[in-house]
Image 1: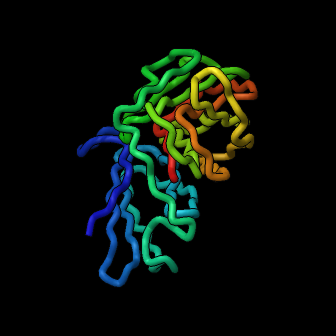
Image 2: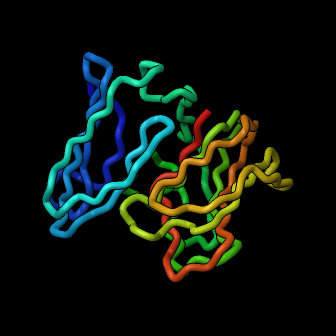
Length: 208
């Protein structure tokens, strides 16, 4: 049975990554990834509570497989479920690209700062109502190095008073941040360091 996965392009030789994931009858998971680029491309793969990074040569196809998880599902031992951000809105400073591209559940569209990273830059999502958040995923997609080196997560229920949620460092394209269950309408990620790289978020995801 085909299950959800995030591609970073469209069918055809477009220099991006295409993939499809499947749940097998025995409960195992298979992921097929095709690099539609002449050059190597690096990417992150996350399944439940675990993730890894891999570099695929130009034009290559790779298959990854996982045995059935203890819980019998792809959500991992934490039992996390993605929060739908349909109808949510996003804003960013600097404006850069349209911030909503980071929350449209499409890894081929993305928000970029269009400027070197600096402390105080942020992207925030307004869910429209308060929901319990247990994990935040920061995914920079295929733009290598365009992740915030250090960051702070904050939340709010009125858009005015902000409270700390987590701080940390990113070392790769995908960072999963587990937090204590928190009711939040607004969630913001703020860069706290400088970098010559732009800041890119292909997907900003919330889980409960």
